[in-house]
Image (cartoon, rainbow, N blue to C red):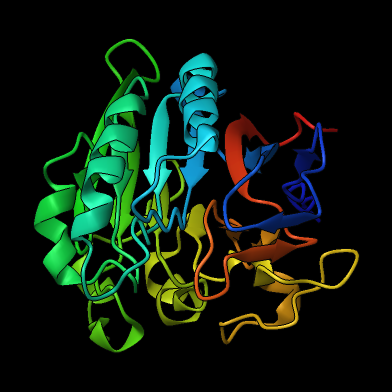
Length: 287
C-alpha cells in the first residue's frame, strides 16, 4: 500500500506582539512571518516571498506608522506585494484620503510587482484612483508571472494571481470562478494564489479554483478582541477561529490578515495591526 503524502505544514514567527490597545491611529504593527509548505512546489518558486497587506483604511492624515511600514517593506525586498482591499475608509468620499493613498502606494515596492483588489470601503468609484498608483488592480482579473524554467528546456514555473471581483459581497458574480482556467494539475509548475477581500468567498470558489493560497482581509481579526485574540464580532460567515491567521482548509492555505487600519470606532483592543510576510517552501522543509 503506497504511503500517504506528507501533510503540508506551516510555521508562524511572531517576533514581537503589538501594543494591546491602540486608539485613533496605528501606533505600531506586527510584522509576522509565515512559512508555508506547498506540495510539488517547482524549484524556481522555492523561497518565494510575498507580503500580504490589507485593510489600510486610509483617512486624511499621514501617520508615522506609514513611514515605518514603507521602511519595513523596502528592507524586506520581497518578490510580491499583495493587497486584499479597503485602501480607504470613507465609502462615499475618498477624495480627502487620496494624497495619503498616493504617497503610501508610491513608497511600497516589490521585485515582481504590487497587485491588489478592492474592498467594500473602496467601491468602484475608487478604482480609477487606485489605477493612478503603482499597484496593479486585478479585481476580476488574472495575472501569470513567469519565474523561469524548472529544468533546461522545460516548462516555466509561474505564479498565477486571481483577483476576485466585487467590492461588496452582492457584487460577486456566482459564475466567475468557472471563467478561470482549470486549476494547476499535478506536474504543472504553477502556484495559484487567489486574492479576496472576504474570507468566506473561499466557500464560493475553492472547489472550482482550488488555489494553493487564498489571501483575505475584511475581518480586521475582530479589531476589538478578548484577551488572547478571540474576536467579539467577526464580520464574516466562516467560523470564528478562521477570522484571522493561517489555516489549512482542504488543499488550500487560507491566510486572513488582521489589517493595518481601523473602521467605525478607531480602536484596536488585543488585535494589533498586522503585516504578513509569507515564504513558500517544499513539503518536508519544516520537518
